[in-house]
Every structure is written in C-alpha cells, then in structure tokens.
Image 1 (cartoon, rainbow, N blue to C red):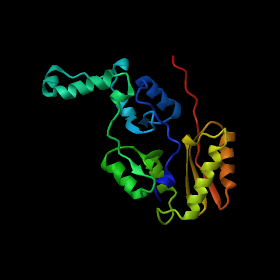
Image 2: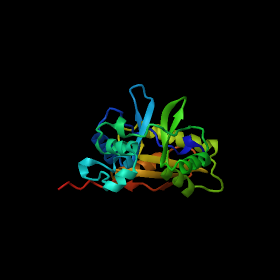
Image 3: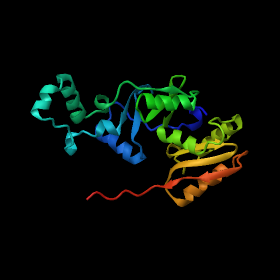
Length: 229
C-alpha cells in the first residue's frame, strides 16, 4: 500500500490569518485534532494541532512558572510560551516546519516518518499540491484490514478510486469523514456518519462498485454535541 491508498481526501484546512478560536471551532466541527495551514495560493505554510491550543490564557491554562523556574528558563522560551498562550492568529501558533510525503510513498515509510518525528498526521502531496492527509489512525486501519501483505493490487486501487469518486458526487456524502481500505475485493469502511440511512447508503455504494466481493462497515454514528451551560 502507498499513501494514495489510505489517505483521507479532501483535506480540512485552515488559513494562516484565521483566528485561533476559529481553528478550534474547525477541529470540533470536523472532529479532527489537527489540520494543514494553507495560504491563498494553496501552498502549505504550516500545520496546527490541538497541542498548539492547550496552553491558552482564555481558558486559564497558560503555563505559570514559579519565579525560580523562570530564572532557569531562557528568555526565548518564555517569549515563545507567551506567544502560544496569547496570539490570536493561526500563523502565530502553528508549526511552520511541516513534514510531508508524496502520494506514492509506501505505507511503511509513512509509519516510520510518523514515529521518527513524533507526529500524528502527515500531509500528502502530488506535484507539490496538497491532495490528502494520512494519520496514525489511517495506518492502523490498514493494519486491521491487512491480509497477507500490506500491498494493494491495482484492481483494489481502482475499486477505492471509483468508490471515492462516486461518493464525492453525492450531495449527502461527506468524504472528509470517511476512509476506505480494499484488499482482495473486500472493502472496509471507516469514519463517521450522521445517520443510519447514510451509513447504509455508503455500504450500498461500496457494494455496487464492480469487483467488490464483500463490505465490512465500521462506520460510527456522529454524536450530537451537548449544549454548553
């Protein structure tokens, strides 16, 4: 398998001029924990994650060091903590050095990249354009559905491509919440859906792709958000 076989596409992104609060809202809305930061020219300029939003003055989680610890901490580190806690724009809190891989990168190289850099997701590029994202969860999904080898024959790749293409044309389908793995004609469906009828519609879409022998539906139902008191 390669990146293109397990990536999630299209990718939820945020803009560098967006507010930190808007970025947090995007995470909640799409049930994600991080997103690439993309400028007006569709170039990746950074990546922002939940970890960048943990220490915030608005919710009184900023880091409060004792006076003696402040003496032991360099001024540059203290200034960086101040920015993380109080900056209002995504551009000021995002990680600017982004690790990326290409759409043809083998899955074992992706796993190694995630482990080596201690990251949870990696953007996927094709011709220097953002085309998808692979998270640790997507790698685990591939492992869960692996048969003898972590390799996907061409016919399986074609099945996945056809299914994704079909669902992207359906107005009721949110493909950014879905992922599919195909091995030997067996399709495994992962992600979140909004209703039981949507869950069944996605299963039927998979069953109608030529070459599909079986479908395993692992979709979870989206939970409604509890009102804030």
